[in-house]
Length: 75
Image 1 (cartoon, rainbow, N blue to C red):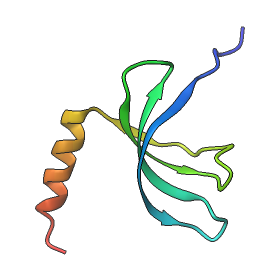
Image 2 (cartoon, rainbow, N blue to C red):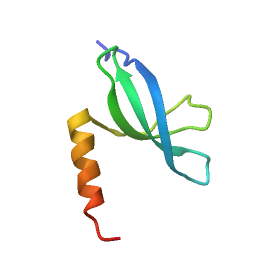
Image 3 (cartoon, helix red, strand yellow):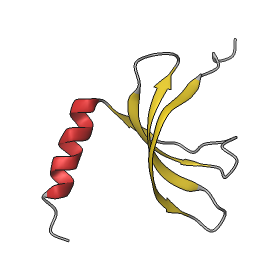
């Protein structure tokens, strides 16, 4: 028995964090996985959006905590 297909719908493209030499972009987006409530999502996307890399998702509270931690970094 195979795994169920995963549905992914980008609700809002927030921004591109970088691009590699192949044209893949690392992006922060608001994504609905399997028709559930959208979550903030950071992952790499192929130039034609046909493929994606592994990523990480955050709830609204988690992304706010991440923002606060990043703001505390001495750069």
